[in-house]
Length: 184
Figure 1 (cartoon, rainbow, N blue to C red):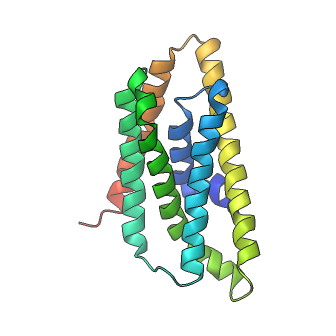
Figure 2: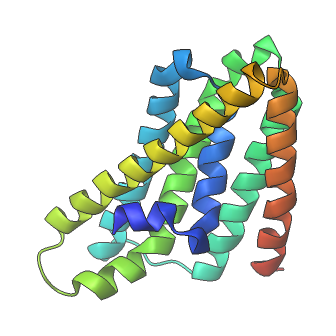
């Protein structure tokens, strides 16, 4: 269920964010990238746990809007820090965005999860979903890393330009997502 949640094209916001996290990295930075992805999964897990046990209840409209805002903000972060050494100093921001978007995506996913699991014991299915989410995110990240490596080596695309192009495309895709979930 978690793997399908990530890889499902109807949930493309998840894929867009993982692409944004991954596009600025290469295989040699796999530890930092894995940490970002795992923080996302932990946020997702925490949100599903909180909703499953009645700790929080939120408006899905607000959650969809905030997801779009975080994706746009992350795309802009990539655009303005592409190719700059200062990006490393601002890693805390990416860590916070990963956790926050993980929480939001978990809040959005929780009703679907609860509908599938019902009143049965929830902790084991929640952990299974978290493992599926992590696996799906790693699959997306590896695909992005492979494509990025090919584009940068075979086609001699500059890393900075690669980050700018992909982040700009995702920014363009996220704007309609924002407008579809507009709350004002």
